[in-house]
Length: 139
Ligand code: SF4
Image (tube, rainbow, N blue to C red):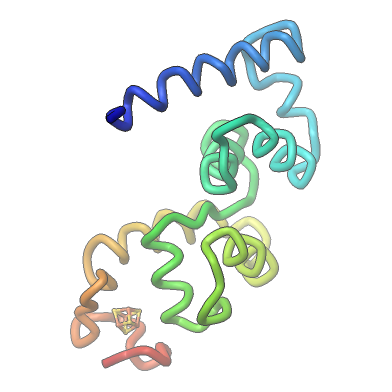
């Protein structure tokens, strides 16, 4: 059985080869010229690149106003009622994009990750949470 790193390394090499073949150089320069929706489509077209990874590249490498939805963000935005209860992480990304005020995605992402690691864990510590009065899932 392959360990995670053994799967990721060949995929990363394959994506880098594809970028070089398509754009003539191994940089994000050409991709970075695209509007955000097209950029996300182009990134997720690479084999093994999902919406979360594409959004992380868009946010952290290209400074786009998007909030990647990882397991913490997914759990919290559902609890807060910012997205539908049964929505997948990928669909939550789209719902969230329509709800966050412009320019707030980076700060929101960092705050949600921090909140998910500290208080709004799988077993939430609602009594200590500053937003419990606003949260429909508060215990
Ligand atoms: S009140 Fe509880 S469920 Fe709601 S955001 Fe805070 S820790 Fe999470």
